[in-house]
Image (cartoon, rainbow, N blue to C red; front, side):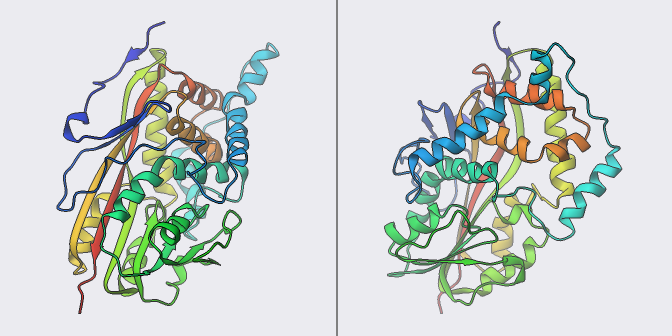
Length: 365
């Protein structure tokens, strides 16, 4: 059956040069020029390349991805289908209860996803594979001090921390709540640290954080502390996500309604109830100006997720990690199973969110 189209495939692409990786069928498209032009011409990265996540064995990453794929294509609904039964249904929780349940975690500024699980580890590896090339270009556009002192917040699997140490000769402090995926390496000091409690003693020539502040209700207080921790002439680099959902093609006509239901739950119920602010990424540039930073620039990317590619695997991973929250938001297990099957179908194309990189410099003395 031919895919059902839901939008204009080429939308946004005329607004930037972008780049695509023919092997993973994911496209990242810059769509707004900035004062500082980042080098987007760097080659796209591929999951499985040895150079992607240094210090992590390639086979280990494949095993994690295989773990995701196994859950991606299975589940209660599929098991019942094979045994001749009907998929189990989950009684929807009233929206008010959904918000109350998810807010229980947000009340303590808790992250919705757990990087200590296999799925959480796979999520970190997907982000490294998909975004490290862009992060390298952004960092490479900055004029840094010789052997800069760097702070990497939410270091995840340590790929950016190692990049700063190896490629930019940085002395790096890598912090995260969960450091199980982090190993000390030359030039990198690892510390289990909660950034909500303050910033490790600086000052720093570069502070970088990716996909962290969007998830934390206290993001503005943390932002102010990060600026205070910069040395004169130091750089703050923040990468965060915002929603920009657009379904381009779907395998079946009924998938359009499922997309709208899932997207509404993710962007309007589950995320906000957990304290996520999907408008934050667009506000960082303004916040940097208000804080007195200079040489500010922002670039917005719109990843194109194609069925079976790494971006769709990433989103399938998130849906598995947050499955209980989505069930409380009114989706059934059968719908979530169908959603993940749709993401695996090569006829699927969509844009889930934007990624915004914003940089600013503290004025030199």
